[in-house]
Length: 486
Image (cartoon, rainbow, N blue to C red; front, side):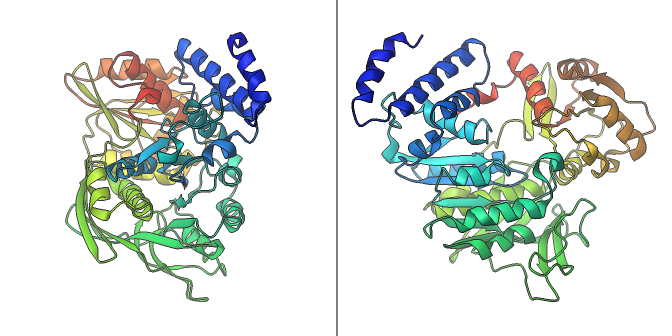
């Protein structure tokens, strides 16, 4: 397959062009073509192949992007936040190179870059491109050694995959070390409402831009919570370890806080957000920055998406997009695949939500629990490598928020029985239907068993979400996630 390009590679070797990078790009293109033939996403394999040949592939290609790069990291909401940022950047007239399929390790970024690169090692139209890279929490220090972003967005830190990431303090420490090595022209965009994330400003060599939600008003939004949730993590001062005082909480440990000992507190925000309405379908948000105010309706549910939108607008502003343009763009955004995504399947409204840790799951439970409890509910729990093999987090998640559920309940995935047991201890007195292992069968059975025109709600861990979505894609109800629009 590579024979036609071998003479060209020999000529490249005699020139100033990096022949190893050229070979890496050729190999990545071949892997991408093979993935297409096999009808697989090819979101990681091309990058993995290219990095084996040229370990500096990401650095050599990302460094060519004339409009710089934006890196987004955090526990929850990375994919949605990145999708919203992409829409805002395009509204501001920027061309975006984005690992939109959610492959957020170094290999996923390498895949994104090599797909837009020619055999000579040049990213096409590089001078006009802005890189937008969602990055896994554990992979962030390594990626920052290869990509020097103009903007680094850090959204939140929650417990997630403890068997892989370790404790939050460990992740924050590694992030801090990587941030200290960044140049002074990198702007750090931080969630002021997350104490541990906000404390990373101490490590920044350059400018810091804080965003946060100052208040939740209106009957639907409800008032702030009175105390941290059971799933809350950052309850102690990141500087002196004294217990924090919280005066208002949006969810988990996000909110207004202060340390009674050393004076550490929620920083002043450069982007302030007021949530006027927040329900199972949408939110009405008012943004204020630099004396400019703009309001928009976000067509994504829940408090967590209000934070995703705030992060996206903050990043867009720092990247040079005017506030009104950014808010208008996200008001028309549909978010990311598998995150509150809808499909019509044989007359049934099917909604697909990702759950992967206690905090994220609790907020999704609140959203779906406030909706139609007569829907067929599908809980898909898997313990594959991408999910995290430790599924003990389901005992910290408040499945009690789903009880009582009046519609049929099905449990599927590789750990379906564990989810059914957790439901029992949550107080569900019925016997849930268990479809172990076979996610596709669980989805098909849920749709078939739903009453005439009744909705179906699917809550799934990462690999189970992709498997459920693949069933919907094969039926033509959604696009394959790697084929969704740029």
